[in-house]
Image 1 (cartoon, helix red, strand yellow):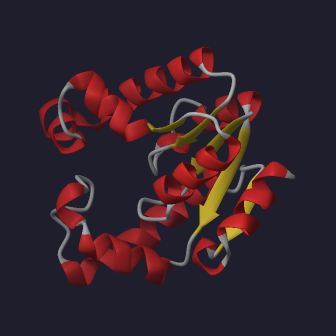
Image 2 (image 1 turned 90 degrees about the vertical axis):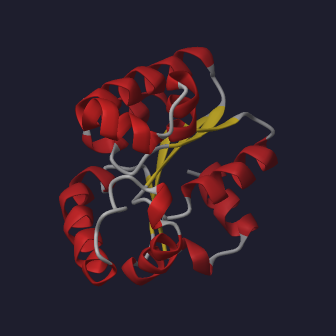
Length: 169
């Protein structure tokens, strides 16, 4: 079983991915971490030195490698992963895609605490961050809605309920 977790940055993909993988006793990977390790640079450094297009190419290659190498895996993707190179179709072809449709206010609270680690939002003034999130979410929504499973307000459910929803998808 392959499970691909998609959603906006700060939606809880890594948190839930580690728990799901542990319960299923299969490997867990965070796509951004894999890219960062492969490049021996932070995501922020990759963006600033090579640009978003380069990053998206590496993202596609890394996603393909994980699919080829792991018949069972939980993968936390980057917020933009489903929106480029037909990645959403590829993930659906090879596994279950789960959209963590987390409330904008929850995302905002989480991202305010970790802006410096997020290259796409680091330089956005605090008072403009909510508008940015809403704008980006609206652009990405059409890709996110293609997921096999949509979990609304993931912070309101228990770990067991989350896992059961995925297992029975």
